[in-house]
Length: 362
Image (tube, rainbow, N blue to C red; front, top):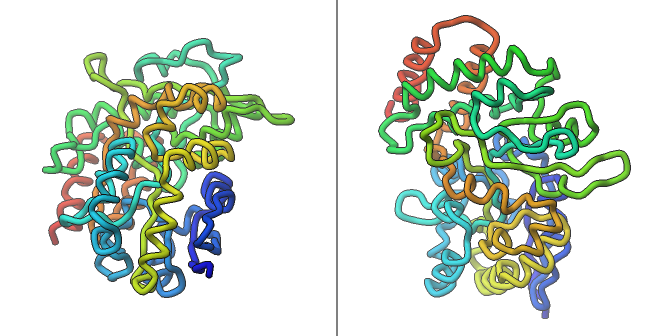
């Protein structure tokens, strides 16, 4: 008898095609879809009452845990399974779902900010932000949370003691302001909008945006795009600077009585052969390391994986406490304002840090 589960993913081909394409011989999952904005706008506590499986992003974990909307993965899966999945995940995706001594999702989709460009117009993407200023037809991704996520990628304090490294943040705001003033005056764009703009030939280059490998294949009226490592803020930075994205597969308390079916499904879905042969072929962006290191997958998507892997592995993991999502939105609004005014960036960074401490620590 086939076990039946109900799941919710995001309403983009990258989010739903892999899950709909994968068929488990013993477990059937009915997948509903929500807009990408639903990750932040719809409380997971509401969704947990309706679904057994949720595709989630890591910045919302704090609120979900506080609401009791997700089960710790070590309450659902055997330690042997978890050890295998951790060893197979491209890092730091696994770490991003660890909080308060537990994991709360299994890495499913991996993404980071990187540069995207038209290879027919730009032979080599800029290696540094100073070089970005010399690049024609630049567009920035600043809609929704993305203006703030650019700043975090460039200047997030990785020690965890502060939100921002002040010196880097001031430097980053100055260079972002300079790029903004010379970039194309497009409407505020999210990552999909940026990729669409470049694919249609209306811009040449975006220095920092969450990448979509599916744009590596040309379609009617849309050119194939290429990617590169995130540009360095400083010449002596070891790697480009970016903020981690992606999604994970989480289990709700509603599914507690269906643990055997959930385990069977997860084992099949996360198997590297499924990720290589099913997920990658339909445009999924797997969090499995074998996919990111596969020359065949890389060729199929115009070099996306090899070009962005180093940036992915060194990406900044955002805070995940209850209340972070609202602060993230406010941070992005502030950064958008700073791009178009002449306020002192040092004063602005101090205010951001002060308000972050209030939200984080009360």
